[in-house]
Length: 456
Image (cartoon, rainbow, N blue to C red; front, top):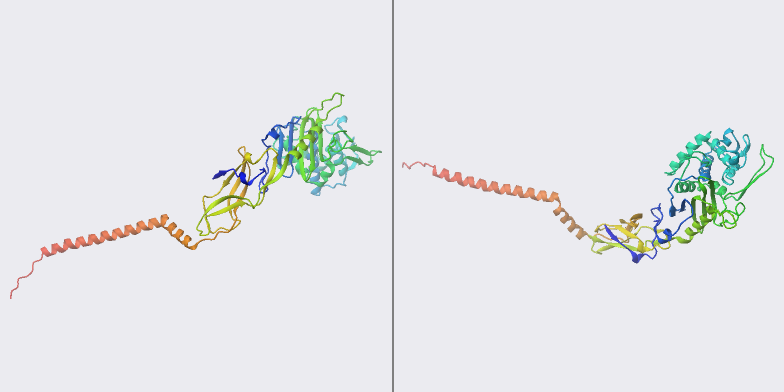
């Protein structure tokens, strides 16, 4: 294995290989290390690459409050996709609509026996954060709230959540109801694959027409202050596209938000913010202001760069059995690109190549000859194939010579030679032995000969 820094080939080094890998941990850089957020837990991730730009207690178990409703909405929309339910389907609120809720916690006062469309219920839950709407939807999907909660936990496991357990569909306080910033990101990312979910969580205001139990129209605004100034003035963020607020005494003030800018989508999770009052006694809603600050920091300080492409040679490998060249150059197979904080450069990364000491001709252009791995602070961030730049033909004469040498050096040949030598030696010894015996017995016969005397 050869380990080198290939600085001549790069001006800006990056982290995620287009052919490989999402990173799952934040960078170690002065830019990142100097960032801090006023919340118990925080996470900023590029949704398209899973690149974690910033994390703060992101895997610590916390109360998610009404951000829980993202999972509830996901399961409802999956039931719609499966044909189990329809958005225009009329739903009647059952006996469990107010289960586990006080009157103060029933956001839209949906009454038992009241009829409302599934889409209206989804908007009541996600836009106005109505807890009773979550209960009604849960019972509609699974038959009971308890069965729905079981499905919530199953789905969380399927999505890779390792620090999450749900006890209800709304996010009401419960010691057995918790999640992590990273798990909430995983749930939100999956939910954002549904167009209807994106539409609902970006809705600024919504109207529910009178029902069988109400004479007036319901009209409410999104609880996410980043979407508009209608609910909370002064926090509007033009790049925001959702997603969900949450707050309880135990959880603090929480916000799961998403923003798009110049084709990039970031998801931000803040858990456990406070709302301190300013000098005029007005609450400072840090879940909104800190989310905006973190999102803008991500957009401003991270960008995608192309490090290497098929025109950049990475290394040379000695070639055998060819008379036309002694080396073949290798390049990356495709494009190597990623996102980095602006203060990380090529000097911060090691590029480790796995290449053979030599390679035999013939070689075809594009043939894989090795790999290149990008490493930072001892952590591998991805591996890409290294391929030959050009064809290299084989020399028949050199190949024949190599074949002969290979045969001569093989253990089979050595055994054959030894066998021939042994046989030859045995033959020689046999010949010597036979000659010796002939001489020995021949002389003895001559000594023992008694010829008859001539009588004539």
